[in-house]
Image (cartoon, rainbow, N blue to C red; front, side, top):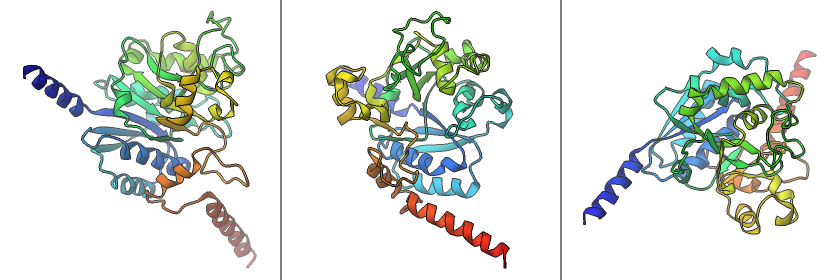
Length: 324
């Protein structure tokens, strides 16, 4: 009886512990951000408290209202907070950005400054994903003494792979060292602070500016090489897994490959082709599921084709008005 009571007590303590999740987005990414958050909360155990931090890259106030309206439709016990990165943006101001990579991708490197010092661990998520498993299971994974837990990249499995770390040899990193994707990270924030990981990654990116191809992800792989732990790959099913014709072409065993393909916990729209981008013919895997979740939010019925048509109408109307 005592053992049973102890087990119940421990379970209640675990359920009372807050899950801490951080995402980053600007106003252009507000729709996928909302879908990511809605999918997270709708699949989370309703009694588990969760604090959601959004590093705010310029989300308009009316969109924040719509985000709150969307998330309030779930039964989750959540608290949503916005973090202002402007005070620390000087550290990342001159870092490279790309056609689909904005400054917001570097915000995760500022976590030690943006979050309270009493927060020792945090799940960081990109805003282009669907969470279809209870995130409590990821939170309960032991971090131990590692800087972070992540999933081996499904297109760049090793630092020596094509598009891996171009200077892994001069960094004296083994070519067999696995390379992780930074879209889903379970971060040991206590160790990050103690060893200035964010600063080291920023310095690496600046020093290797001409060699960097995958922005902060590359810097993280260089700095914490051999000091990170692997998550079950189902926690970050990347778009590239669908390009393999069989498990033998992938970096995984047949069992793991089949699990990732057929039973993902998180779906990461990691290619440059996203469900919310207008496309003529190509359709993303799980695109229909993305819109199923979207239709539960304040953007119900929104589709990229209609959005493009409306933008073009406004554009032409503006031109017409100038000649009146």
